[in-house]
Length: 414
Ligand code: HGY
Ligand code: MN
Ligand code: MN
Image (cartoon, helix red, strand yellow):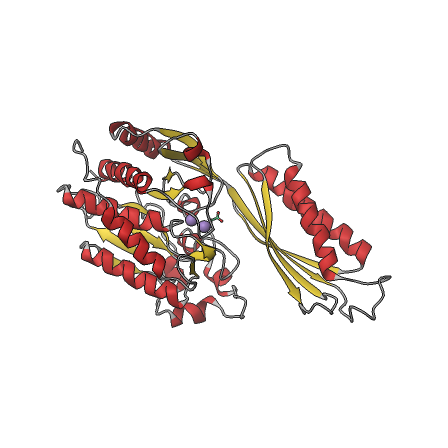
């Protein structure tokens, strides 16, 4: 495609701001947990925008949404693009949403230029990329890739004990869970536009990141059962304080991640739920949700093993019961060389600087990679900040991403 797509993206920025207002929290804070009221309003808003762009919109049994720009050759598998609109508590407005609204804008730019795709171009809005509701990330894309089976999905529960079946039905999604899994070849290729969620592109003054690998995420749930009691009357000797035991495990996990000798190993305990949670009552039960990642799966697994060893040692020494559950331990994904070459050519044509890099965050592309060739396109985000209300991407950064995405989609769908 030899013409510069219209780079005016004021409309897109306005849509991002409108979407950001649809939140469970007081704007500018974005919280949008899957199947919640804000999630449902946000989906309705986006489906309206897709319909207004003349796309054919379909939702699957768990709410993965497909908005297709029909190509001239219906026999050909589509080129996909998209991301997620759910947001963790106390989040920003760009994570995921740049890939959904930016993907839609790329389609609208191509329509505006009179481009006619031979292969359909399909925008995907994935259900539950964030782990907030069920403790596992990428629920929708995992099921599309059949990495999470229907029976495993049915076993998931949120903090209130509600399951996927109840919540998806209430949100109005019908169909069998078996129908969510997609066959190889359903997508010809898939590209996800996303903020970097790290500082490198901004620090180095580079416009775009071409992602070569997506890190391998794992999550381990640890429940520590000790002995409760009166904080004043129960003396220290012989206490079985579940939170003191948990504290040792949190520090052991941090030490294990710092000790692999690789900067790519990270570990976080993002959730620590204390029962009964009263200041004058000795914690009898603690639930920890741990997040362990690396771009090297084996190195990541060493950290999981170190956590397991620490559980055994602390349990024996403190006399507390410790139950571990491996929620997920996914392999890293390698992005497709052909799509990366197409992105690189588009960036050069568009006069944008770029660098090859790994994604330390996981994304739905990690699971789309199981059923199609994928690549990701990063734009900078200010200070590398993400998963916080002050997450920010400049309009010109978003514009560069949309511009290069549009060019690349046009090339792959021609
Ligand atoms: O946690 C992640 O990497 C993603 O932002 N959900
Ligand atoms: Mn996120
Ligand atoms: Mn994301």
